[in-house]
Image 1: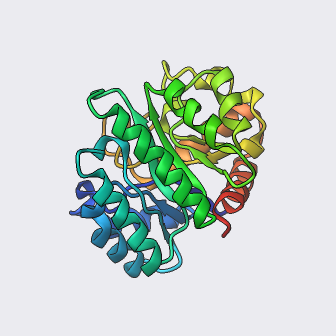
Image 2: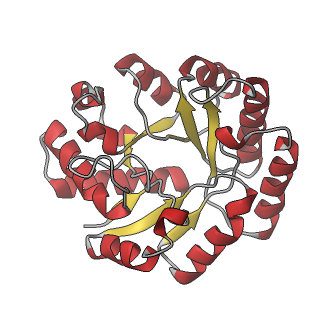
Length: 255
């Protein structure tokens, strides 16, 4: 049973004391494929080192996270394009719009999101979207950029059923993580109505640990709890969830 974690920040400082052990723990549970989203240029070297240490398991993305879009965002986007010329990446992400923390850089976030979608199209890569309190703003840009050359994952999906359907209409898979196990998460109430072909698994570790680890550091190993919850919602064996979500990840990332 091969499990794919489509979104995990294993280069995070949260793993500095036991990174190797945490990764091996996940591998021992069947998590063979780890997709690593970018934040900004300061993490590039750490991501490359992670890939080098665990060849065949780590698949890197490049991009500028919306909460790191500041006055220098053009320089950061130039770094993204430079890295695409130097190294193999499997997606542009995580990118998008985040209005939870502040709205000061909304205009810059919109420009950066649109430009990174266009970079993804240019390089025939999928996008991985971060959206927090910004569904309308994200959907507005996806509507402008939609087409056969647009595909990806709506990371950490926490919207409504209607928003899920809209995201899928833009050729996005739904990234389902720890929130599906929360009592107040709400997405568990409608996910049974979403065909498994539209779903991939993720942890977003070290963030958003699933029940019973909520409030603690998340790990890729805990994706098993997400998988089991999804199997319960859909009324299918765990192995089927692993098989179908890994197949979906291959469709998105091309590997």
